[in-house]
Amino acid sequence: MPLCYLRKSQNSFVTFRPAQGYNVNLGQKLIMTSSVVYNGDLRTTCTHLKSGNYFETDAPVDNNGKGERFSPTDLLATSLGTCMITVMGIKARTMGFDLNDIKIEVLKIMKADPRRVGGIELVFHIPEALKNIEEKTKTILKHTGDTCPVMKSIHPDIEVKIDWGSWR
Image 1 (cartoon, rainbow, N blue to C red):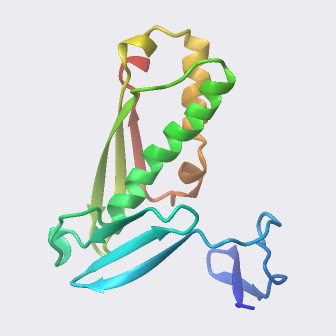
Image 2: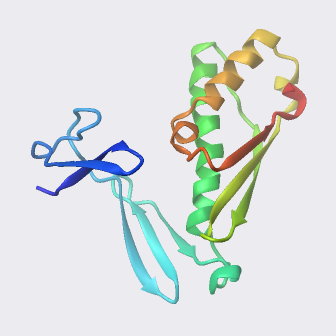
């Protein structure tokens, strides 16, 4: 069983071994999510184990790569947009409608020393069919997006800006 680390504070960790096959946080059976294979030339292949779907990553041009595929930091920023719209879609479905055709443009802003994602900017493009929904519904959906699991997982040093487009 692997040794796990639990953060108690910024500089303090507790080590433990979870029960065989259980996720410490959720008490659920552990099932691996994905595999990552390094292919050389600063590229990886990432496979979703349940479905078999896969994609490749590449290092960005400004970090010795070719920039021909998503970089790992691109995926970090993009995952925020996909998480927000997914949980908003779940909420909309429970409210009796769908969020089809909403588009989110994602801008990742890098910082140096140490090299890291310093900011993420999202711009929502709302289709005509959804522009005039009730303000209360917009507020509920925006709150749902703002509290998605990825947003809650982003380090507080990463500045996140969201432009809700016509839902301002």
